[in-house]
Length: 280
Image (tube, rainbow, N blue to C red; front, side):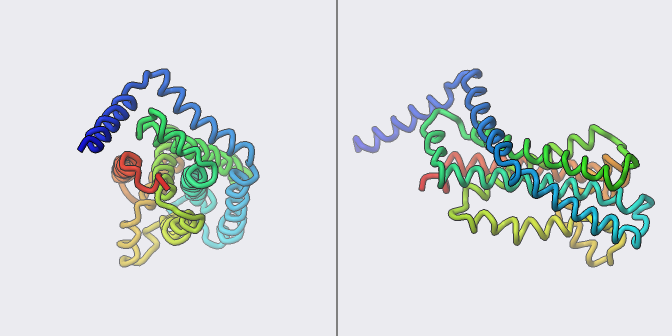
C-alpha cells in the first residue's frame, strides 16, 4: 500500500513539474528539438531534398512534356500548369510524412534521445510541436524547390490566383502529414514499419487524389471513390490557389484540413501522454 501511495505521489509530482515550465524554458525546449532536426536535414540534403526534386523533374518530363502535349487542356488550362500544383503537393505530403516518422523512430531506437525528453519536464504538446515542426519545415522547403523546378517547364506562365490560399494549404497540409508521420513513428518497431504505411496507404491515396486528372473526367462510380479520398480535397484547394479552379468547394477542403489536424493532434497527444510505443 505504501509503495502504491509513493508511486502516486511520484506521478503527481512529475505532472506538476511538467506543468511548471516557464515560457522561456518551453521555447528553449522547442527550439532545441527543431534546430536539431533542421540541422540534420541540411547536413544530409542529398537524402532529404534531392530525391523529391529529381522525382518531380521526371514527372514533369513524362506527364507534362510528353503526355501533356497529347492530352491538351484540362478544365480550360494547359495540362502542364494543371499538374504543377498537384506535384508540389505530392512533394509536400511525402517529405513531411517521411521526415517526422523517421526522425521520431531514429530518436527512439538509434540515438535513444527520446529517453532524455521523456525524463525531462517537456509536456506532450511540446514534444509534438518539436518533432512536427521539422516535418513542416522540410515539407515547405521541398515544395518550394519543386515549384522552382516547375518554372523551367512552364516558364513564367504559371498563374497565382491567391497567394494566401497557396501558403495556407502548403503549411496546413505539411502539418497534417507531419502529424500523421509522428503517429507512424510512435508505433513503428522497425524500418519496415516506417515504410509500410507510405507504400500501401499514402502512395495510393496520393496518386488517386487528382494530381494528374480532374474528377470530372472519371466515370460516376470512380468519382464516388475519389470523393472519399481526403487528399483529393487538399490537392484541389492547393490548385485553386494557383489556377482559381477546383472540383469541389473550397470550404470542403478547408474543413477536411482542420478536421484532420484536430484528430491527429488528439491522437498524438494521447499516445505520448500514455507512453504507448515509447518505452521500449
